[in-house]
Length: 284
Length: 272
Image 1 (cartoon, rainbow over the protein chains, first blue to last red):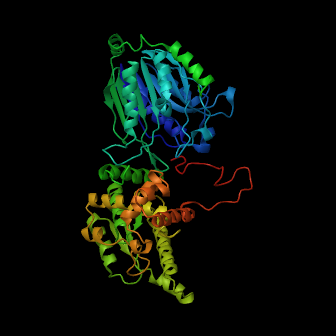
Image 2 (image 1 turned 90 degrees about the horizontal axis):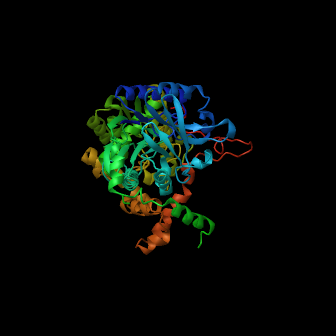
Image 3 (image 1 turned 120 degrees about the vertical axis):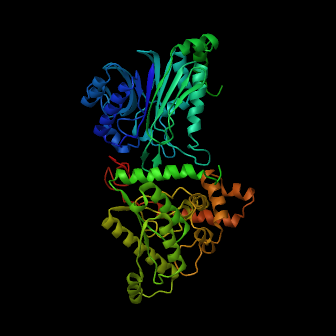
């Protein structure tokens, strides 16, 4: 399978322009024979939305702009980020990721962990998602996370326990820390989680971060693919835009699971019982 | 955490920031005040690399004596980078005012001069369709060592998250002319002034204190326990606290359900 990492810089609050950028990248990815193209978090809207959240939110089931993406996703799968508002929950704006394949919307994940501290203001403007779920994708079982979700290992655990072969993370992670090498200090944090998660879940981890600058904040890029067993397969540039296409062999999941029996020996029911106790009597 | 930076990566981030921020807002050119000092030399170097030297205009704005060492150093920066420069004597804008409103205060005179320079920069910004690049560094911003609506005024500030000692590292990386690297930092408010004399601390010590207070969120007590003088640290925290007004837009008295500055919240780069 060929995976395209679309490390783009969306324009803040300009859905029409970002839609064109998506269509352009989908076409490019198709020309490069990609089976899957992954865009970053809030790729259709930009990240630092504040009060724009409600103005750029859309319902993927009915929105004409979203239908254009569905129509263009023929013969390949697309993961993109958008601001979701459904008719069932008017006035609630979710930071969402959509998995679209062959003209159909297969899955929507709403970001669960909304960073709201320091330079982050997500919970001030966005509604909180409440679920992580593995779903059947054309190439196997897949799970979605958005940026900060990835750094809470319970989220990755649910996708692992749910049998994900491919874990896809879309991100708008600002770079911080310039005391080290030729990348932001914070980039290491994402790679560390990618390496660990791909190792212990024996799944592929695809992480796509955006680039560009919003209100003085530079997004770090550095998108990557880790293969099962913690193998770094591809890494995109730091802070520069890039369309990185890389072939992965999904048989690696089976190979890794024959060798490392983390999945076979996993006991989610024990974890669940233990968690129930933690939630019921936290001070126990 | 320390004050050490990787200058080549910082250069990459800041040149991208300048290019991105200007082009998003429809500009190709930048303008900045060239004082002959370190900060404006580094800012000019960043701008020249980001936009190309011919797209950068450095305004040299001495009060009177246009043959001073600072003016010569500003010219040196211009030639070193190949950017365009223009010298404008601000005395004719300053003298008539103080002839009519005399003062013995060097600070009042210095602030007025900083604001005259600002008004020239904004005029040239419009004439040249060039955005103003700010040169205030993090040390100055934190202690409020700048004239509000004067040298602090700008359209974008690529320098504002670099402490003075970090600007110095960047200056060495760029190969800023030695006479500029060597000389004592000065706000140029009056002849013979130096920042370190006026603040009463060396930038090296000030940055060590600020880095602990700001980046590491240490308390005054933590700093005293690790060997800093209490009086010095308390003076620094007071400077930070008393200059917050320079880092904010003025408060707007709230009356309506949705007010500018309170809950009418849009990004700066709205639609860009």
